[in-house]
Image (cartoon, rainbow, N blue to C red; front, side, top):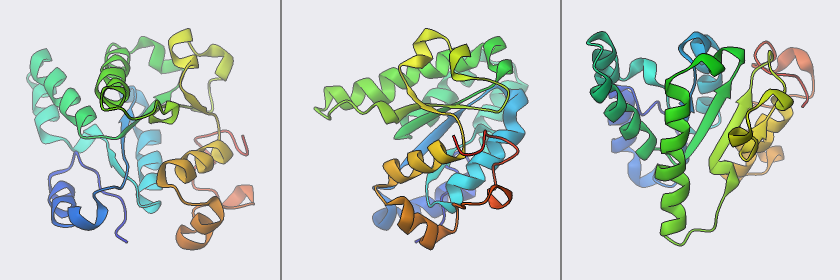
Length: 199
């Protein structure tokens, strides 16, 4: 199967549309984050890509980048909402910097409506994992505000592996064989410098 696509990027989106029949049920994860955590998000996106999970990472969304350059809050908002609506899951990447973000709380609120509430309206059983929080190394679960404590919390490489396994409906053992993403040794995990190891 094809690796995951960034549905914010024009060419990746075209490739996704061309392959949509064979990958239509594949999850797409909207990566909500503070601008200063972009380098960590790029590593997380690469990790999802290797696991054959589509994602939305805004840095390659031309419409959003133009709206930001124009300092147009209406267009920024519409671009973000479009990315969330095209996603099946939201992964909120949280660091100490996140608390100063004006956009992450908006994205979470809209994500609740567009992803979680939409599913409930369609009769889909509530699935907490659809809105998840991934904490970077500089933050602990205790530091999360109450409105994030209700999400599926990912605190390290082990719980990220569990998350990938759950949203792809594949056993972690098969993921180890198929994608070689998971490792029992600290040195080989691609996100050791970003996440807490073995949590």
